[in-house]
Length: 284
Ligand code: AMP
Ligand code: MN
Ligand code: MN
Ligand code: MN
Image (cartoon, rainbow, N blue to C red):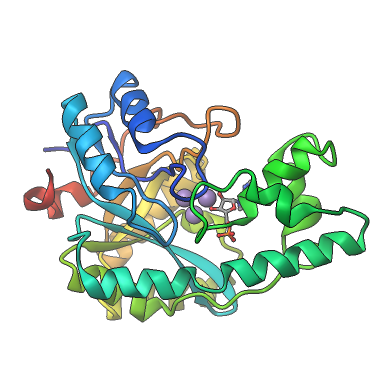
């Protein structure tokens, strides 16, 4: 295995905030030339068995996946887990705790939006929810587009759903060390998702990578739908500096919303160790 493998190790289904089922994603990934796939729903492994079976019926290699929400230095950081045992009880329970509180948070988001004249947002968002335990900002964004409040979901996030905006409710997610430990104890590897998306100071970012390593984290997303070519080059350097393996994933959510389709990504830079080299015996 080498860096020129069409691996897509980050995407979302209706089990979290994607609009396609695991089966439809598998079909689309295959059609796009994906050779190794992972479904990484937010804080949830409930779609893994379906994804594994769908990959198998498409003749595509599969790694189990999830994307865990973590609070670090006051910001939300996403940690992707890959190649774990999706029946592991500690991981399943940890993710269930992480999902807890989303319902209440969504009610508060709705109250915040009502204060600026947008009514019924909770009920509106619920129409888009595929998994009752996983109501997310994305579902609110879809409703606000439907209601004609904004033209697209990025505009909703900009105007309503990010820090300081009316529909934003701060939330405490899992701890970094817990997320990494759940993944490691279930036999997988932990990967820092889309590092360019955070707004850490250089010191905070250094602390994130250092603590992540200390806790047993082993990878970082270098090539992702969230990174420009410059950002990929920058985090390729970071991967080498911290001795982390590199991952590649589109972060595909929806044909209507995602600008990067499944598998439609640049290759990983050749000097990096791909995460799939560390996971050779976990590929199904
Ligand atoms: P939540 O876990 O409920 O906080 O929702 C986070 C999700 O919102 C992310 O996984 C993305 O799918 C989506 N998201 C976050 N920021 C943006 C943005 N600026 N534009 C579009 N979608 C976003
Ligand atoms: Mn998402
Ligand atoms: Mn993410
Ligand atoms: Mn994601």
